[in-house]
Length: 112
Image (cartoon, rainbow, N blue to C red; front, side, top):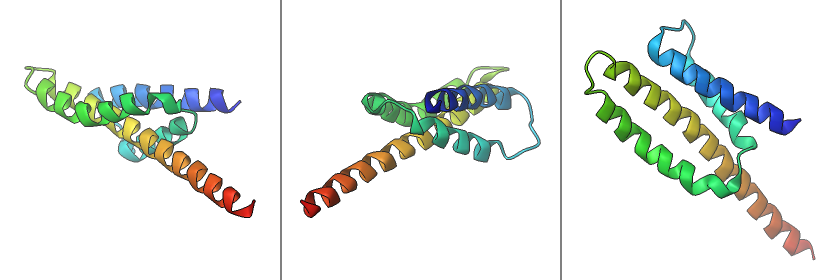
């Protein structure tokens, strides 16, 4: 059940990231993207941590580069920024879960 929820959150976040890049939406899109990214990060595979970290670093540069494309660059830059926000939120969640498990293991080791 959790896998379906996190997968749905990831799909909705990416869909909203693309749509919000092209259409003005009368809500706080970044906040919704961050919440969906956190939910998606709960079910993210820890093995993809490095890939997502690189994506967080590269997406702003890609957004700046595609902004130079005439007629559609601004929208593509907004999409890259929105996707970066989702991936960042998921990465923060993965780090928090990893830290929780590390501390939990340390505390459990003290009891024995």
